[in-house]
Image 1 (tube, rainbow, N blue to C red):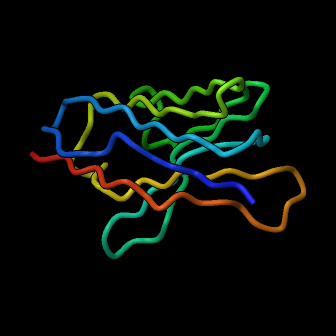
Image 2: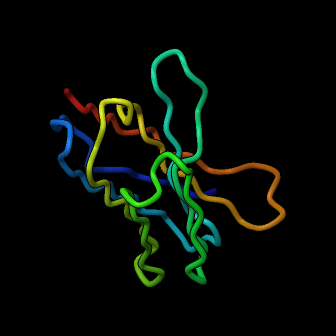
Length: 114
C-alpha cells in the first residue's frame, strides 16, 4: 500500500499561479496528477517517472510543470497562467510498472476565478 497526501490547493485569480505538492509513504515508479471538474471525467494532467520522464496533457503544456524529489518521495505541480477551466479537484496518483491499480490521494480543490 502507498499513502498519498496532497497539499497546496486553493482559490486564485485567472493568470495566477499555484503549486501543488504530494508526499508518498514510500518510493514508487510513476507519480502524477489528474483532475476532475464538476460533471466531467477524471483526466490526466501530468506524470513523471523516477527517471524524470514527463508527460503532459495538451491543455496544460507550457503552463504547468511537474517535478519530483525521489529522495523524499514527493511530486510537485507548478501551475502558472491559470485559467477558469483549470478549476477542478486535483488528485495525486502513483503507480508501479505492471501494477493492476494505481494509488490515489484524497484530492485538493483548485478554483480559478475569472
